[in-house]
Length: 561
Image 1 (cartoon, rainbow, N blue to C red):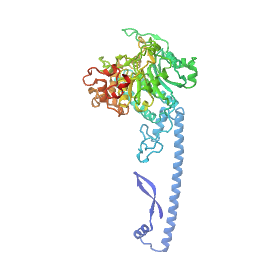
Image 2 (image 1 turned 120 degrees about the horizontal axis):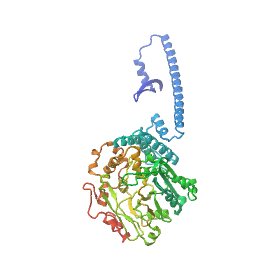
Image 3 (image 1 turned 90 degrees about the horizontal axis):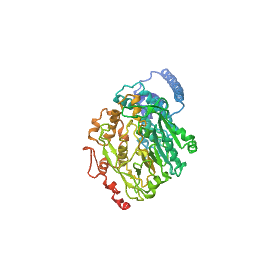
Image 4 (image 1 turned 60 degrees about the vertical axis):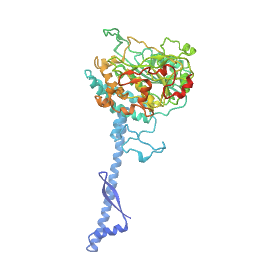
């Protein structure tokens, strides 16, 4: 074979390749070449060929050297950029701006072959990013979330008079650019789930004076406190603080800064050991940075670090002794593969030990369409039912946000939605529907393991912070706008995707919507909700009130008779 360097187009560019010719092809080339005049000219051609080849080799070496120097300088530049952002390769700007400068996209999953250790090269999207194979650490998560929430707040500053639609646009555009790509990467780099009986406690608090006791009692009354890990999201006022609305005139008073629940707990005799062992992970948000309870729970979910079980509660709770072990035991007693335990717990004045002794149960069976103009007919959970004790947890239709416990695998299958800021109502019904359609079965706990402080009148509310950040009256229409994302997923006819304005309300909704194991229509029939008439079907959830399985689960009836 004769190798002759030349340039040929490839992918729209001139790229050096080799021309490989056989002896037969050389003969054809010689026939096409002009005849040589004499021997001297042939000698000159030989010299010319040698000189030309030498020049080609020399040029290639020079180009290779230049390219190598460029690569070294480029890598040093990226390293310097990372150092500029605190040396954290996964901080907000370092992670995204530097990678974008290297033409690496963020947020697309690389398809893999059947063997998880052997990627199928033929299925890999060449334009998709390749994520790190390492699980994302808690420190990495906290570094990013801190930068995100501060960066978002900087976007809000100076927009005090913006309309609610303009406020949404500020949130949407920044979240789409920054948080969403990171969220998709996080879901690919989630920690491996342990099988050690560990429990993760999601605890979101907004200016709540009960936070310290909730955290303290959780560890004091846990059977295995060394296996309890808490993701604490604090939303506190640190200076120039104003309390909650005191009367109908809207009167407020100045109050001292809120207690740092994390600091108090870590300095206490109970908490010192657990904080030192890294069992309490704290994400601090200033009051005017608050995005509401659902967003806080989203942030808390990212502080999970491989714990086997996941429990979400409010920051004003009481606990039954050995609540952690009892919760896990109840989940294991459920007759189906993917159980979720939830209900509205009894109030904080209840004697949980007495309720356990007498076998008293509280089950969440009812719901209704809200009739308040501020809630836009969103579904509100309500009626609870009692019943006789059974060793097997009883089926239920809904998940309450203030208390549920499940296997932590749901975090990957039903991830929290980053595009639901500022909502108070709606999080429970969307979580219920998404979990059920993803194959999770909802149960009532046979024993109440927590109590709940339901009445906190005259205490600060997060929407008051929204009004102070922007202007009075902006929260309600803002919440109703964001609720269209929830209503559209639940098939409200007035919220069909084509009718939603602006369309950005539905950005990437397919990534955070219903599961594929069951149909939403079947769930709505099971729970008796008619989205067209906004009414309940006759005797909805009578199966729940009777303590029996829902239609389609009759094979479990014998467990409750």
